[in-house]
Figure (tube, rainbow, N blue to C red):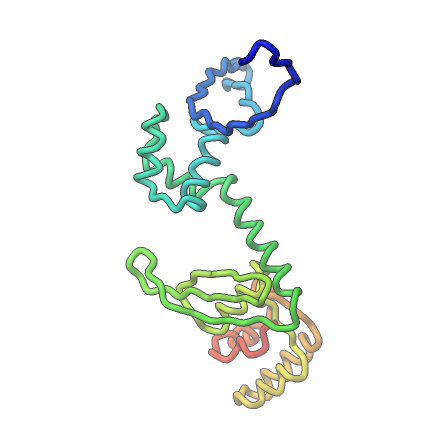
Length: 231
């Protein structure tokens, strides 16, 4: 610099970087033995620590799988290259089982429920898929604001109703339409009268069906048409 250069302060310049390193922690857990109960008590681990791998490794595995579209062998290779000793089977469990994954299932249910009420209509389509070599069906339900995908072994009416119920039990409404159907399907008048006297106007689920004391009612649900008055 020339001799007459005058200091005028600093200019900010940001350089982004990332550090990937292991952070292994050894916890000393207090252990107690109860002579009266003949039982060992061990102190709990900190909140968020479950199993041999911390939340950072679990979240990294999920990012690599669902954001980076990496296979499980490649995820294993990445972890081993940075000093994390983990097997493909453990990676698979992290991605598919446990409380960490249940959060995403619940989020999907909430998205689906919000999508169902976001428009007065829904579009639905289906396509085939293989699950462990077996023929399954992927049901797509969507509108302009969302899309959801459900993989099921069947694509019948009850399967679609189960999707729309979001895990709630099937319920049956014994209204006039239901009893008109019973006439159409030629159930005996005696059976229809018995069902009408006890169930007309009621909504019951499948578990309650088998609690009904009159065994004749149960015959109703052996017919293939019973789904026609499910709600």
